[in-house]
Length: 194
Image (cartoon, rainbow, N blue to C red; front, side):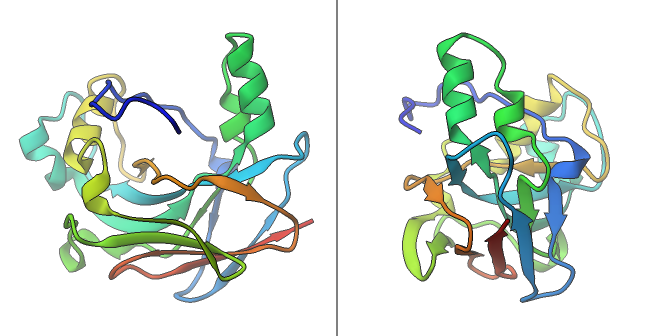
């Protein structure tokens, strides 16, 4: 998103429970409604970490012990709403936290999948690659993200942490088909509906 990649401290935002729209089976497509109050909906593919054991002030060295599983997800954003809020110095919670703004593929247990720098993360929109990178490009490791976040709020079992997106964020329209992938995890297919 144009920020300095030299490890500026991470920042966090929350989405409500109504943001989650989960695929119910491997390779099942999710239909997400095009949200109201915007004409500028953007995609952001991300690795999602599910917390299995809660805690506060979790050390980086212990963070992986708190992970229950992993998935690929999309952090959908009402970009115009976000831009207007930023310009006025206002919170942009509603730019990120709207109904169905967090589509997610089925989780894979932490014991069955592991993070490695070479694993690819990719998003296609209508078959065209929009975002492509590797998990090694994350500015903050998953363990560091868990440690940083747990120093600010208690993490609880069932919490989902979206870890950040590669370059290539862009708009989607009604009728678009999004296909999000991370090596070794179930693919997420989302159709943007009305």
